[in-house]
Image (tube, helix red, strand yellow):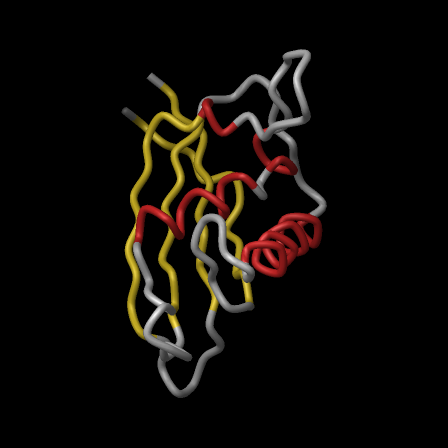
Length: 125
């Protein structure tokens, strides 16, 4: 696979795991970062996404940073990049067009805010 970078996002906010109380604010932060670029959606593209989560200290024992659960709400909030699925059900992000995904997490450093760096690339064969 070959890749062409389309956009790099710096999302500032507390990352959230799938189906938690923090999911809505995190999705809003991701959507805001996408919207600030003024780019997308890329309707006919296939995508590669590279995400580096910057995780803050846990607030309690239930505040864990499970990488696969961090990915889902992040991709779900990126309809401004991927577009929407063409189907008759409730609106859904077309994240099924992501063919390549790299994700990592690390503790936030003292000189930065929690969040994520997201690089979105077009896949070319």
